[in-house]
Length: 120
Image (tube, rainbow, N blue to C red):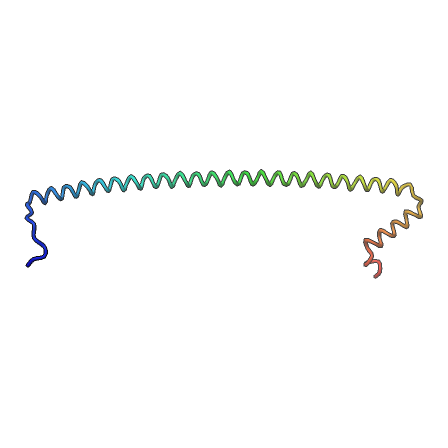
């Protein structure tokens, strides 16, 4: 008893089946080629978009850095101006003092700044 029955196949039926297989194969090859082309185009577009995003981010970081440096410079200049104004005020007041008071201040400042060196 045969489990698989043999089907009668004519030669023309085989040729037609082969033609259908070849046509289907050609359709699939075309579909696969189109899908690959679409994928490659999408990948190029994504790569280009990523490169543009990186360039934009780098430009923004450079602008932010420039602004931060400028702000720090402005703040430093303002602080320096305050220190100089205070020093001018102190110098003007000190210039009005008598010479003995100036020498006493000078000695006190040197002792505070150079204290450990003066003890040697």
